[in-house]
Length: 201
Length: 201
View (cartoon, rainbow over the protein chains, first blue to last red):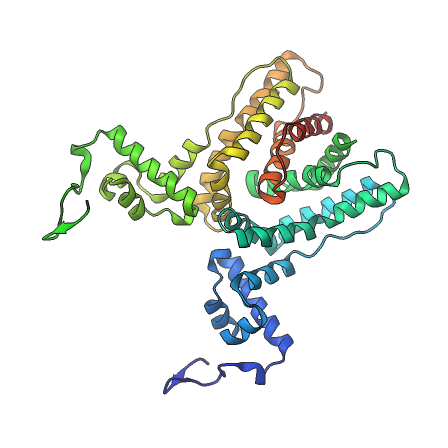
């Protein structure tokens, strides 16, 4: 559909806003960005390639996302939805829900195959490091909420540090997914929750 | 020094074994590989570029390392020496030594800025995944040794699972270095050791 006649693209206008709604253009751009992230990591995402795959003109992409980093941030944020903040009535219960959801996402999610390329790029690129910090804050909010609910309930040990609890739960789960590649089963989820609760008490 | 006259390189022989010892050639090749890994991650390492930087002929490099993956494996293995297996007389003591050394390497080591690019590449490249598994086994051997010594001493809880202990210690340390970028101080080291011991008991 991108064949050119006399230097002019036909079948697709240079700026296709006329034919597709903003929502459709945004969705097509993000879908192409997700695809490229999955296939080849962060390094594989260029605005040129996103434009080619999505059929959305580069000028349109740059209208919605001023930089490649902004586009990647948005695509990653979509793939990293916040964790649930369900109130089970106890800190142990809430943390078990969180650990179970994280383990499930690590086993199945596109997100888990893309995060390493963000981490790697953040080592050398301050803009990506900033992006990653923002994603990380979104992901850990549910741990802060769970500890806050525990405080409000007056549970014993309610002065626990949510940053340590998040580290003691997500650390071993991430480790098994990316470093040791061992099973992320329910027994391991129970192990990390009890480990976090015992040590942070 | 690589200027060519009449198609023949001068100032550097195509195969420079004649001028440098095998040890010197290997050292120069590995040093250039380390540099490239640090600067641009795994994707930045090509045998061409290693040859250019080290001044070691490609044919020589391929004589010692049949593939790029073999060269990267060797360079990474050198940067990931095994952990100490010092016997402090107790599992808690041995694990504290291990966690302290890992935290220190994460804070200062070149290794810690390169590992993410290996993890990322392992998501898509089975050869790199295999390389990473081998490095991982080297790194976790000290945990298996510490638990085995604990068994031989007859310490209580000596039937602990070394894989879980490694996950509960290295997981939160890795998490802080690469994911949350929080402090890896002595207090956190004590926290992860007690967390691993309590939960694995």
